[in-house]
Image (cartoon, rainbow, N blue to C red):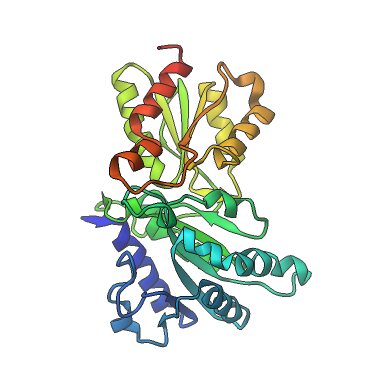
Length: 327
């Protein structure tokens, strides 16, 4: 049986709402419209308007309402339409939700899950297409997730809701239609919120990616294999806290690391990963760490310019071959 990333996320939400009456979904167009990306389609009919709540177009307001509900004993899932719009709620997320446990000396927790679409590739231009996951991964008090597979889209929500502190889930919009075969495997799969995953083992080079860049890294690894290069692909999955141990173990095995990140290079998560590798495994490296990131421009509208601005498979392959001295 095949299931899509979108269906996996919907299934996870439905299961959570069936299992615990404290769980409810709120956000712009999550009810009658079925969600901007159709993730919540059908949930209003099943659970009613008390538990699938359409909100006004005020991210600052409804994220704040979600924080209040969490402090009051509920388990809200707050959907923000895109990461760009989440900037309107930064005060609530960073100054309130992330800081509450620390500022209260552990007396208060905010068991809040915030879901949002991220990433480009759909010709929605700059105000709907950026990848700002690194901004949230910078903030203590948050757990930041980037499910890149159907299995993770299905499995990450339950432990996120079980976490007593806020969790932000980034769903790359290009992944919603992706399908995977789930027949013959444990379903729903087990999942934790602390570890990266090796998606393809290899010996000559580590490709590190997350979210929408994981399929590109996998395709690049396949092309490199056809050229005689054995690349390992590491899916970060969890952007905060970073699983440094798994990153280091892979680098010590392959002795080369290339990070693929749809964020901009300046101040990027890719830069943080490279710094940690240099700090912790410098003498294991046979070549300087490298990265493939988005061009330092607002994401363009025109299709050819948008594709030129984003990390692509050919660029990943070329960077890997340069690292190996093949070109």
